Length: 297
Figure (cartoon, rainbow, N blue to C red):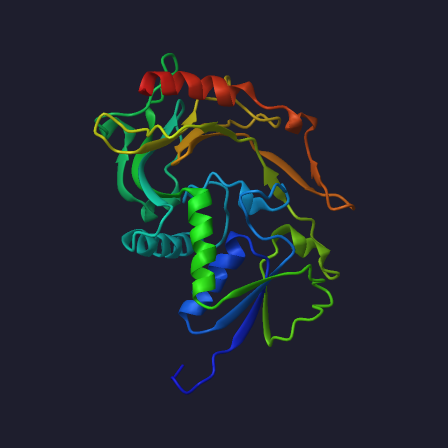
């Protein structure tokens, strides 16, 4: 695009992290962007349908599948590394540990991580006093301190002359949107499309936030986080698959997880889980993390 060319104006539906990030990337390529959204992120907004309010925010493709996943993940790593080098507020880097009490194949995404070691090669790892986790790996990993990071994204989008219009948009009519290019980043809202015949698969889980500004560092003075998989005899889901608990420190709280329940949307647009136990907070999230943190602290 030359200086004499007028920038194409693009509309985005949805002001979650996907919509805001897409808008920024388009701005970097010279486009003008307007975002239309029924809900805009704010600290006082409480709406479980607005998924961007509730991320643990690790830059690890644990629950993502795609035929071209490795390339996409490497591109995302480049994006976060650029922000990190620019000292973008809310981007942090941890020494992250994935710990298993059982044997597991090395995941493909490790090719995109930095300074990868087997846990047996680390000078120190988080540990549980009675559950050994001899298998796994450690690596340097980007995280986002969510409230800070997402607010900074929104401010960057607006500084680049982007605008967010609070308006519910009918995706089948696209009323009052006069743009040649419209990008749908509405997430679960895409299920409202008349031609949409596939049922959305939506995974939800429990998070526990503990208010504290206490940092979590290893004896080597490095910020740490972890995923801890104790084995199917100790923590599993309703389909008898092994689950893990995790710990991510942020500037004003610690995030403990997690559980995973698969569901979809019913005819009223409400999440309908496969399991009746989805409303029950798993004690393992608190109990396992508590013992690991006591040992680590």
